Length: 456
Image 1 (cartoon, one colour):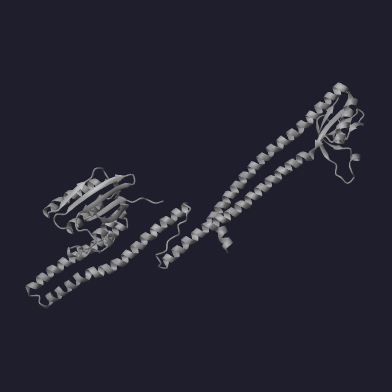
Image 2 (tube, rainbow, N blue to C red):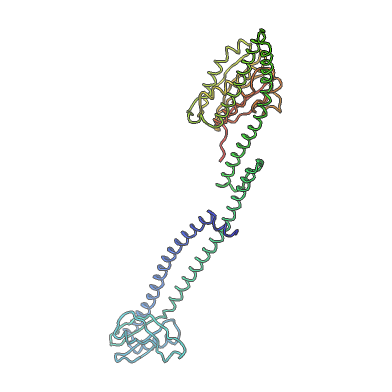
């Protein structure tokens, strides 16, 4: 079953396709090389016979037929590698072993000749010689040939070597394809097992990251970030239910008591006060739910279609200018220091709300005399915006928790509010690809929004 799974993987099919294409290309290249080598071998084979024939013709011209016959006998007996034949005008053999076959009688040029059968053992098969037939001036015929099997053996060796090479290519390609498929299937199985654990409710598992930085590793990182995001949203949803029950129980219980008192004695002045207080509490509850709905819409990315290029520094200056009169009345200093534009792709209304929430929190939770600064910086990695104050700040253990929904420090609970402001800031920042961090300003609190580095 495991072997069948390997054969069905996309990696094996891809490897098989590439192997087929490579083998086809190798066969085409091999055929071309074979034909080229064959032509070269046969040409060299014929050239050697022509050179030997020219040498013997020169001997005939210079020394006559008898001298030529002696040379042929001497070379034939020495095993020089060629076969010879010298046939008289009457058709009788004068020297050498080659004979012109009946089909080649009267030929002048290349023929397929055989040695004299009487010179060969009866059980052996006659050798075929590629021979050059040349008519001499006295009417005799000169034959010079070489065994055809010499060139055939060389070409057969070339074909054998090529066949082994193709077979080795197919074997190695198949083994390599199976190995790659096993690796691919193992990594896919790890992804599948992680997904199964997540579906069963175990959100602590993540896809193992391979040391090989390839496409599957990049995909695993992307899925792990997706799982982190989903786990965070699930945890937030669980926390929201408990936080809503906790934060809304008190105002709802107060409204119930006031309304019950007014119901028992509607004629008193306290009934009107109870109704007014209940209306105020209900407005606060509706404000809380509206904030939750707005955070949900932002986290769903519903406003992303309205993004355009903006200057975050200009937006921050406008928000600071809008809050500065109120800050001055409370005896608090609010300044903006931006020396360079901070380009960002985003929704202007949401960015205004994000910065306004940060400045409003800094003003609301600090005493008169505090100094609040909005600053920005720009680098190759992106842009950064900071809202910092020199007030009381928050505890080290609360620097991360303040961005959770309904989370409020002990000191913040003394002031009115829903505890959703920093959560709204976090939602808007994530929508715009901004990393949000809170740190100790020594003294005070600093919240930084910076362009998050994108991973592969």
